[in-house]
Length: 106
Image 1 (cartoon, rainbow, N blue to C red):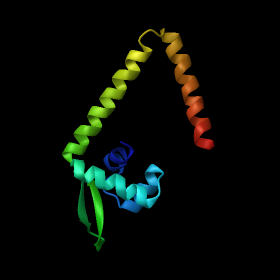
Image 2: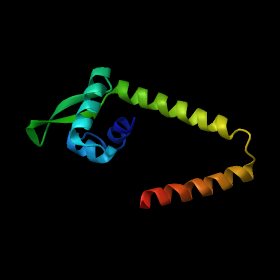
Image 3: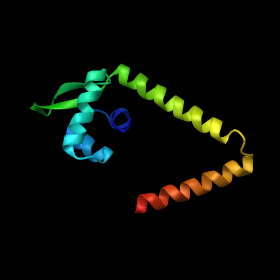
């Protein structure tokens, strides 16, 4: 999912750039890319800047899969928060943002 999000948000990328963006080493990124290519979610194109390299591009099927995953996640969050009052939702949002910021600094 992270790989598809990077490609959807930042456009075509190399395996090296994807590895850095998703926080994995290059061999792991290569395996993730290969799985995404086999699933039809990503395609390899020739890098216009260097014909010896491949550039990875999200496909329409990849965008659809990502959209479906995000919709599923959004629905799960909405169901989990359904019984929260508006004030509890605000408090949760503040605490979650604080948590995310602390995590980012770590």
